[in-house]
Image 1 (cartoon, rainbow, N blue to C red):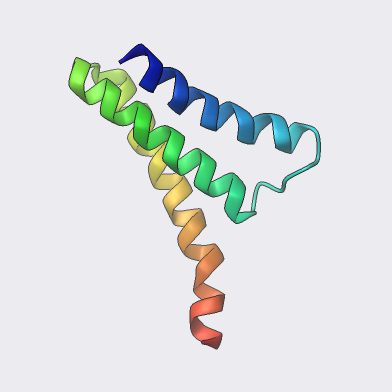
Image 2 (image 1 turned 90 degrees about the horizontal axis):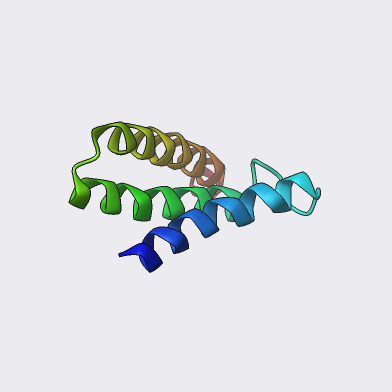
Length: 80
């Protein structure tokens, strides 16, 4: 389980480092996907361990990332 938890954290940290180094935009699909998937992995780990604080944090993180992903793909869906 520790390896899975480390993988989730790594996904989020990679996105953070890439943004800090100006190699990725916070509005890019890659950034949003890394955050969404990383937070989803950490949510599952927190849910299994019944860690309420982390469950709330990771659900919020995944939710914000999901909204960003939806917004980034919405114009592409409209133009078909």
